[in-house]
Amino acid sequence: MRAVVQRVNKGRVVVGDEELGAINRGLVLLLGVEKEDEENDIDYMVEKVINLRIFPDSEDKMNLSLQDIQGEILVVSQFTLLGDCRKGRRPSFFSAAPPKKAEDYYERFVSRLRERGFQVETGEFQAMMEVQIFNDGPVTIMLDSKKNF
Image 1 (cartoon, rainbow, N blue to C red):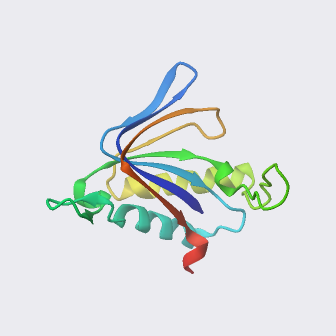
Image 2: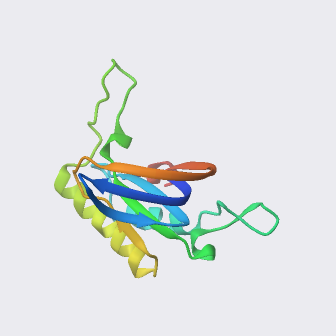
């Protein structure tokens, strides 16, 4: 799994004229699922995201996690994170999971965050979405579950 994690003051996702999800202080997370992903990739990513210390403490140091600040999360599925641009000019999405698996893992990821007590909003799987991100900092972190096993 790959994720782009952005610390935000607020974020929202819209499909057409309908707002599907909106959050205040917390994280906007763009999530891509790889065809080789397994259950431990979901577990790794959930733990990393909720414990990532990227929020400022009273001394303005990045020492607090999403859990510490009781922040909210907006999770948006984004297979293009898996685009390989090393050859040619058009990205290859060979490593992206097929839609059925990707949606299943995306839903499991979201469910596990909710099970941990977080307010989680989402976009719509496989939809063209407008994502509004009010990045705080800006702070943007890239995570990849395969680079840590």
